[in-house]
Length: 132
Image 1: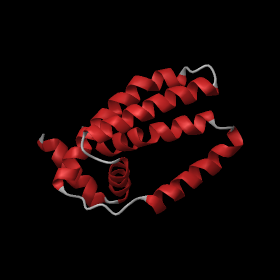
Image 2 (image 1 turned 135 degrees about the vertical axis):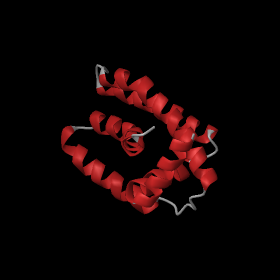
Image 3 (image 1 turned 45 degrees about the vertical axis):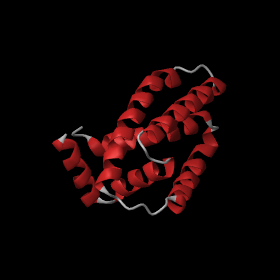
Image 4 (image 1 turned 30 degrees about the vertical axis):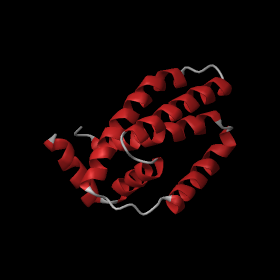
């Protein structure tokens, strides 16, 4: 887990990539910008405790497994309907992984957003992965 931040970003972006790929080309940029703006506005303030980070690491691992499981299928989808169905199934499984780890999707997304913006939190999370 030495590549924590890139891994976080990859895990978080699977669903966004799936949605953007299935969307018409002209709407991709607009949807991505709107999605980022909405995510930033809607991200709840979550207290980042060691327990929350431990749960996050468990959830992230599960989300990565689901992402890897569906990535090739998604890339090889023959049409946008098939791609959307694969993406929806993957999202459902990712949500289940997050919830099974004891987090809400809002908490998981808030941690991802904070880790991307906070070098100290990145170092704290990296330290936790190095210790395990």
